[in-house]
Image (cartoon, rainbow, N blue to C red; front, top):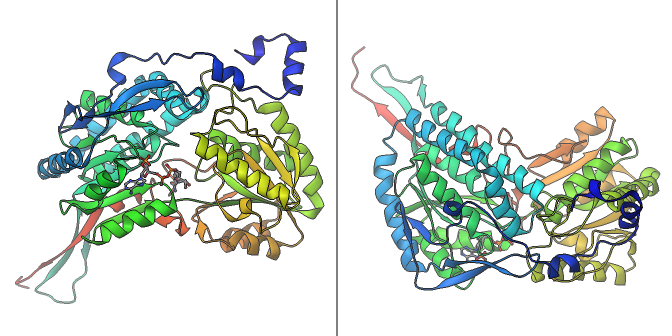
Length: 514
Ligand code: NAP
């Protein structure tokens, strides 16, 4: 239902009453996309392959079954690795210009089908449709960006210390890359890696999250339509029960040269241990715990709008979501009041396919339980609920605003991945920076200030890989996405993303006559 089409009195009522996701739970919603994009088999060596068993893909808003997908095991994972290894020997010799053209065709197809691809995201991940469309534009943009970067992989000719020798540094693709991705950006987390890998001349095996295999398989369908050769892009979906054994093949098979993972820090450590047995290259995009600091000098309109964007995108389920809100004493009450009003006016819970919805469900009930625990633990330690606070039907959680939060509360110690804003009051810049840095991860951080000296001091002092200064949205293929501390290894996007899939070969050209 479109909010604009509701009569004014009903609209006012709707603003005053809590949204009722129970309505979403009990209605039926139909996933209606063009048939070739709704794939349920694995994609190995350019063919659609059935596994012996299947697992259900559920709509997280209603719990209803959307599809049954092939549940790959170690045998299919090995088949995919072997296919990728065979394909590598020809793909690496395809000219950069031709690889660029194929990636561009894939980009064009994603753009052409973005409405259907967005529906897949909304139904399997619960994301509001407008955001899913945004994800599709973002996802496609990595194919476009790396189709351009493919042609700009330059080596070096280095001045030699000897007259009879020349020194050259070549850049070559590393080989087969295993790509393991999460459910929160079911399309973009794949293209952010795969576009760079294919541009560099690598081939890939993708294992998507159990919750969201459909978007990955739709990407495979379009890769085939784009003319990406068999074996270059493979997808092995599997259930959570099969994940460890599939993961073991992808992270320890000797034919795999590189693993690239996006997901939790805990899983990243498990995969790194497996990859160590055969000394693979590794890129890790792991969890965050972003501080969002509002200083007394901040522009309040900018800070509140940025808080809404950076906290409530995907119902708080992004790795760069603001997690810990630190607000200076002079503007604390004003910020709380303004943010609470914005939350009341702008946030609507419901099924992602309804136009009025801005907040879908969390991915599953485990995720909702985690947020509910953080809220109840904070309240039991003295936090005050300003807005929200309830866990609702299914995996919905009310957008929640807490004040009087302290650093010892659970919500300040671990990543939330849900629609919770815990606000801690501080007095000095040093105090805010110390609290922000007192954690073992460092992905994104945000702060709001109009004092140029403070902007430089704080931007340099925050221990994070990405910093938003008076800005709550950071992601773009032009930027270098990555974290420090236990948030990861390496970067994605930017001119550096392709280097994660390249290695240097030093060539010493001797015996030359002066
Ligand atoms: P997760 O539990 O770590 O899962 C991520 C992926 O790893 C899924 O495909 C999962 O498969 C797979 N996996 C789990 N155990 C595995 C194993 N033993 N072998 C091989 N694969 C394994 O993370 P999540 O809950 O899906 O995602 C949320 C986390 O991702 C958050 O911490 C968030 O901050 C992080 N994240 C980081 C970034 C970034 O760029 N830094 C971006 C997005 C998300 P199953 O689905 O089958 O369990």
